[in-house]
Image 1 (cartoon, rainbow, N blue to C red):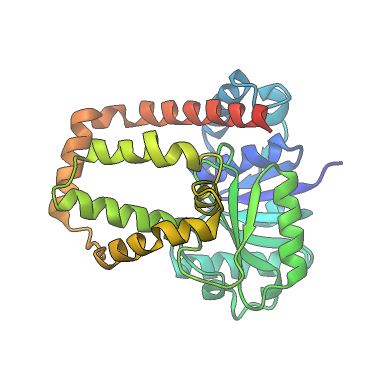
Image 2 (tube, rainbow, N blue to C red; image 1 turned 90 degrees about the vertical axis):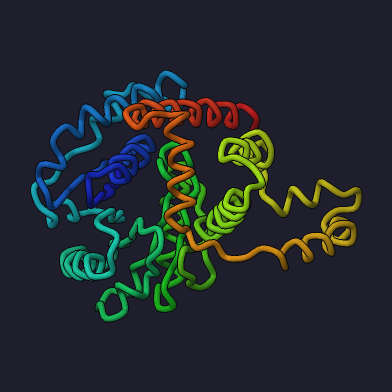
Length: 309
């Protein structure tokens, strides 16, 4: 019998995690405190799996993968025999504390308990729990079945063995885990994304370019390189003698530019202007359709990257 993963919360991220683990051969028990959230899940999962199959991104039929995903009648039933629990409930400290206290009391001592939170550090909801050494954040990128990065962000008291076991499970599930050496709000991805958004908002607010052109800077510029290598490898390859050579050539300019970059307050007037530009390009009633278009573009990119390895 294959190993079991419990996915807690059947929203967008929870369903995506169910696909990640079932696609890799794990049994998945999906549970939600609101029973209505489980209604229609199978059809949504079937649609996502059909899209993956059309791009050659699953090795089995959608129905075979779907057959590994089951809904649980209770939290206790979902956690029973699970090697890892992936929590995806409301993004508040109080809710996280409550669900992790309950899971810590119900799950077997060897079960790893993880949270998909985007911002809340592990220490904020695990400090006073008896099993705090087996709890950590495992923050995905939406949707995790298309974007493999998962940030493992332990608390100071999370055991090294827990982190290594979690890294192994996510790796076997086809994800690309990175481990934070110490806690910081927003982890790695959201802090880097936040820095880019901060500067994009400043450039827009101060009239340097339209929202559409600033999007092009990423999608037709930086994003092309960053889809297969990161910023450090980028600069290593952008000077004849590597990183130090790049720093000698351009470091002083980056330092000068950094001095002119200020925090952005995300004021409502700026955001309303961006919203108006976006709705001119994409009416609100087409957002769902465009999101599926995005996911299919990601599938195409993922399939391409697999062929390049």
